[in-house]
Amino acid sequence: AGIRHYKWEVKYEYKSQDCYKKLAITINGRTPGPTIEAQVNDTVVVELKNSLLTENVAIHWHGIRQKGTPWFDGTAGVTQCPIVPGDTFVYKFVVDRPGTYLYHAHYGLQREAGLNGMIRVLIPPGESEPYTYDHDRSILLTDWYHQSTYEQATGLSSLPFVWVGEPQSLLIHGKGKFDCSTPGLKFGLCNATNSECSPYVITVVPGKTYRLRIGSLTSLAALSFEIEGHTMTVVEADGHNVKPFVVKNLFIYSGETYSVLIKADQAPTRNYWAVSKVVGRNSTTPKGLAIFNYYPNHPRRSPPTVPPVGPAWNDVAPRLVQGEAMKARQGYILPPPQTSDRVIVMLNTQNTINGYTRWSVNNISYNLPDTPYLIALTDRLNHVFDQTPPPDGYDSQNYDIFSKANNTNATASSSIYRLQFNSTVDIILQNANTMNANNSETHPWHLHGHDFWVMGYGQGKFDINSDPKKYNLVDPIMKNTVSVQPYGWTALRFVADNPGVWAFHCHIEAHFHLGMGVVFEEGVEKLGRIGRIQGHTMTVVEADGHNVEPF
Ligand code: C2O
Ligand code: CU
Image (cartoon, rainbow, N blue to C red; front, side):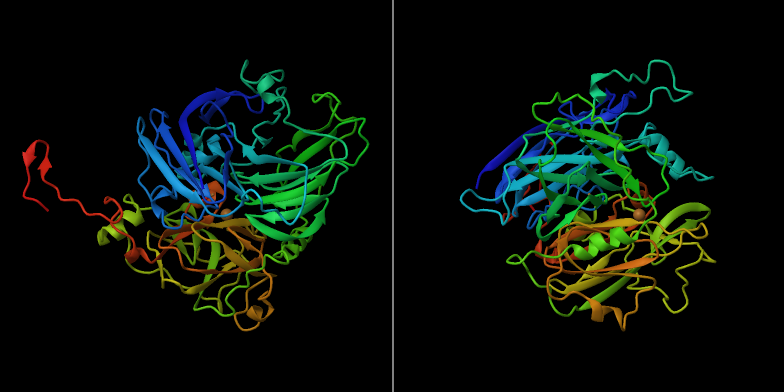
């Protein structure tokens, strides 16, 4: 296995990704950042220099399990202290499985300022995938706000609450098109002819088959993605081989990755639209458009048709169908443990704390401590976070998930779930009504440090007696991100076999920021103190030029 060495400088730069000029966070001048390309079992080394001038940073390698390297998970407040301006931090980890993964900032609301990218891990030479294609491409889907993250974060923490609203644009691999004739825009800020916002182009040769790796790192939007006139065969999800199924449009939530196979089998005399569209919210955000370019047509030539309409935003049924269709592929099935040692039911609700709007799990809204848990636990600093364990459930007898809660007041806490090392844990994500009548939202939940089996989905309130009987114990897909649909539940199972401290949270940036997450600890006693070189001790003999009583 080799070493892939990257040297990155992170800074703010003016960009016009959707024709509207604003400060974006770039890596070596780009957003999305460079795609990390590696082979299974390679070591990826990223030397990250923070040139943000007045802002900390941390980067999370989304979908990489960090077995044996929990301190490189990149989650500020959980696994590391953020990197201060001017500093360089070296991330070093092994990519131990093939597939499509992501990376993004994990500090404040920084992800939505454009600090994101993809990781592509290839199978070893000589081995083959269970499907064939001629070319391998990747695209990252995001949404884009014109406000700065500071304006957004301030609004979210204010009384009265100021919601971030719907994004101004959808970007396909960093490119979108905002309507510069929108009234009220400051002169010179929006330039429709700026080449930075010309549509992203995917060029294909007629007759060839393409593997398209699609990742979503939206801040808010759940998306439907489609290529006009073409079907897609889903073959990979979050790094796992899927029992292939064909779709016209792919639903993709923030934090998910998919590989689809697309055959360039349509009339080769023209180009086609590639479209992303918001679903799950009655959004004002226009569609994201890229060009699916049939060689040798000009890549900038607009398709002669109007972009496909896409599915209705409020039609949940096809999204459930896609979830149910996602199973492990024959020959790649790793069956889950047939029973679990612990079941944690997590009620997802919108709440208030002293009038401030928050999100919470079992009525606890999550606050990150100043000292990262991983350091606190390996250094036994018990005062750093709340030691009372959070509850394993909620009062499901008396809680009505279909209506606005009477008492919406939540508790803020930094407490964590301590899991027995190597135990099997079931998590039931239970959705409910928000603080507005007749409203329940979709939440994509992401687990750090593990993949989990998706055991089942359901609508309404989870029934602990009957619903587990419907679990897929045979060939469930493994993922690291899964959605819970409005008023529904999602059950997942994982083995707590990765010593460390791991975040599990809603991947909607503002929801996590408002407390929608938890943290798991398992096997930290197996880790040395972070300040030490693994496997060695050090004897301190000098400090600032003075001899020290050795320790
Ligand atoms: Cu991709 Cu904790 O997130
Ligand atoms: Cu959410």
